[in-house]
Length: 322
Image 1 (cartoon, one colour):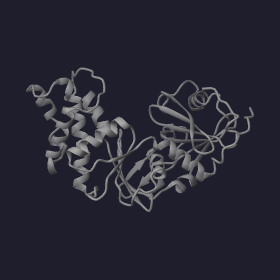
Image 2: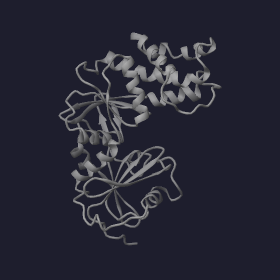
Image 3: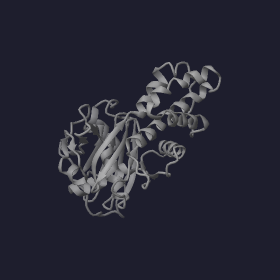
Image 4: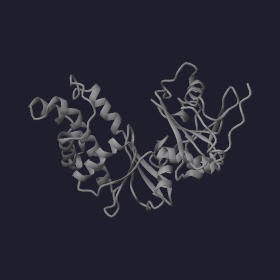
């Protein structure tokens, strides 16, 4: 089947992770015209797999270049996009895009991840957020700590506006395991996610007080405090969250990742970044700056460098169904 010719100036960007898919339609100036979400991560695809997911989420959009980032480029994804070694920037990523051709002849370009061989450590998806953050905040100074909270939190070092190195802390995944698969979370009531409260603060303070020993020496306190009646069962998840996020700040200070003269920059979900900001305050650190939705900007920037996105044409006259 022959595909329709691609429409000049438009771009479809895909933020394709393990558990979800977000698609964005960009015009030729990098503005997002529409965003769509589906629960189709690389492990939860609809019938027909990757091609069916793309066809469905992009239904009614113009035929144009497609750039995808995230776990879609992993070994479990649509096609593996080998890691680019750090130091890396938008140009290094654009030079190593991996292309997949669909049954109807459409080309999907996949952004590679980044590997820090010195650590060793890897990231996939976060590199696109970092490119976006640097584009949104061109004055980010050399040495500014960049923090991407999440399942696998990243602490990133810049050098000449390139991703020079990074460290992964499995904070979010550890929280999930402790909350649902450990004695600390056993038989706890289900509670809706809320803004951090006093129990979160107590967890952060416990992490801060752990000193050189670290938070492993304080985790069991979640159970002890509950058994003694000092911590309500419903507050245990918030306490655990405070312990683990507090441990990130404790470790960062102990490792010398934080320069007292520079304010860290958080990149990611607003609610999660709020918890990191609150924990930073309890460590007497400057309030971190926050950059939201950097993935969209990163996709556009990489596409622009790769020559996949150009000047907008026919913007005023074109209409697309939602």
